[in-house]
Image (tube, rainbow, N blue to C red; front, side):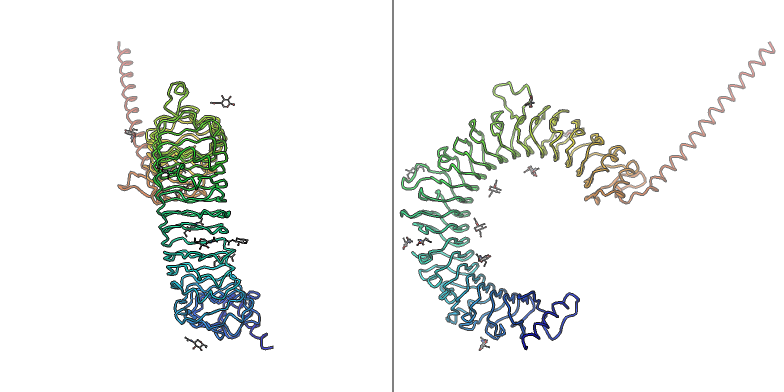
Length: 640
Ligand SMILES: *[C@@H]1O[C@H](CO)[C@@H](O)[C@H](O)[C@H]1NC(C)=O
Ligand SMILES: *[C@@H]1O[C@H](CO)[C@@H](O)[C@H](O)[C@H]1NC(C)=O
Ligand SMILES: *[C@@H]1O[C@H](CO)[C@@H](O)[C@H](O)[C@H]1NC(C)=O
Ligand SMILES: *[C@@H]1O[C@H](CO)[C@@H](O)[C@H](O)[C@H]1NC(C)=O
Ligand SMILES: *[C@@H]1O[C@H](CO)[C@@H](O)[C@H](O)[C@H]1NC(C)=O
Ligand SMILES: *[C@@H]1O[C@H](CO)[C@@H](O)[C@H](O)[C@H]1NC(C)=O
Ligand SMILES: *[C@@H]1O[C@H](CO)[C@@H](O)[C@H](O)[C@H]1NC(C)=O
Ligand SMILES: *[C@@H]1O[C@H](CO)[C@@H](O)[C@H](O)[C@H]1NC(C)=O
Ligand SMILES: *[C@@H]1O[C@H](CO)[C@@H](O)[C@H](O)[C@H]1NC(C)=O
Ligand SMILES: *[C@@H]1O[C@H](CO)[C@@H](O)[C@H](O)[C@H]1NC(C)=O
């Protein structure tokens, strides 16, 4: 009966919590079925009266110092205990022995280094399969007191401690481990055979440590190894006959000068050697190791100092899907028939001068990154050889786009994009493009076209023809365009246009079919937005950037009306100012009132009336004078 009452109380306190009436004599832990949540309540122990059966207890972010049976109110039926972010520095020996169901134990962010100093094992951890000891100031040997008797432990985190060495017996009491994380320690040494007793070990995270060298790697059952952010200079697998199961190897941010040496029989699918010191790939190197990676799908060698990649290298990685060689020193790249399934190649930020794709070599390539290379001369049909290419990044180069007569010159110092049928994304910003000839992108499927930062770009009136039903985004930022003579009104799919930082004085004409949703006109020379344009835009526009234009206040009343009364959002409204004769400073467009302009028009009206009156008077005077002389004449004639 005693158990029922607290259960009732807790349920009540849970229900009352929502009606905001705290129970003073009872801490407001929340109970959801068999889970009790007491996180962040400055508790030193759990509330004395817990429900009868608790599966999960969250006591994290409290003030627990002494973890004992009392702290846990003598409950032993827990399945999951969250005790992270407390100040635990004492654990009653044998505490967990009597918790036969405890599977997940999180003790991270405590002071377990103090617990370890007492040199008493906290074990046994009879049922625990997931243990988190991260952020506890543990140094070498200290983990022994927690692991010495944990026979079913599979998942262990020792992240962010101060361990310098993994010794032979570190994991001898936890032989079921499948996943160990030792990220962010200071490991310098791993004793021979330290992981030998772990037959099931499949994932090992040693990232952010101080390991300098891996020789005779022989963890044949390991599938994931992370050695990122160490000082590894050399990685070599042992020459044993065993079959390695390693699928993912992360060696990024190390000091590798040589490609890792693996046996031919490897299962590697993912290899990251970015941010190392590779200068070359020596394919002819050590005959005992081959550069054969029969299953490699993802290879990242970005941020190295590679000057070239031997073509024969690719013969050995036929299953490659993603190749990243960005930020190296490549001056040329040629693809051979080996890259039969490659989808993404990143060659950005090298010093490429030439690019050679033999016919029928990159038939599966979908994305190609070539930005930041200073490429000037390419074979003019180079992209037509990539039948599946969808995404092309060519910004920060020096390319010219061929006009129809240039194609026939030899050599044609330009590239062609017509009939690159699957092309959807093209970035040509910062290329010093001078002209954009007619039909430059006919027979493509372009949805996004960035032509920004090509100041002085001369666009043919029909340069975008062929994109009527595909183009959605058009970017023409910072092009020094004063008059956009290209026909945009026929681009019926166009939704987003960036025309910012140009010299535009008028907007292109849009017809009723246009459905522009966002338009950036910042920083141009616009004085007036024509009423007809405003009317057309108003129907579909959602976002308009308009700041930094010399708008006239009173000739933009339609625009003002749109800003104030339609759903159009003008994010830079603070900087949208206009010029009014009566004010020396530009006026914020939102402050303009009909009256301000009305008053001006009344003045104009008065001036007009006065002028008309004057004119009338002059005419009248002339008439009178004229009649007078006539009369004179008459009288003269009579008298004659
Ligand atoms: C922790 O609690 C136990 C049981 O209440 C007690 O015997 C022990 O002295 C306490 N230890 C510390 C270090 O406070
Ligand atoms: C292993 O532990 C980590 C953190 O302690 C957790 O995120 C992960 O889900 C656990 N995995 C398994 C298989 O228990
Ligand atoms: C791996 O190599 C180390 C040292 O060379 C050796 O002590 C250990 O027994 C080897 N382990 C296996 C599983 O071959
Ligand atoms: C690898 O796993 C198999 C089966 O799980 C086991 O028999 C073998 O001893 C393991 N090898 C090592 C080196 O742990
Ligand atoms: C390896 O560890 C680093 C640093 O902790 C992490 O950023 C990276 O994602 C990990 N690599 C893999 C392949 O998971
Ligand atoms: C490639 O490796 C072989 C054998 O180790 C060596 O003789 C040769 O000089 C290396 N070549 C380069 C370019 O490093
Ligand atoms: C290639 O690597 C660089 C640097 O690590 C990264 O910024 C870029 O996104 C990667 N490219 C691809 C296509 O993933
Ligand atoms: C094109 O490249 C430039 C420069 O890297 C970048 O700022 C811009 O956002 C890119 N355009 C698109 C549409 O991604
Ligand atoms: C576009 O494709 C059509 C049909 O294949 C073809 O007749 C036409 O000449 C192509 N246009 C250009 C400019 O290549
Ligand atoms: C921009 O265009 C104006 C004329 O419209 C010209 O005087 C100026 O030199 C151009 N600036 C650049 C950077 O091309």
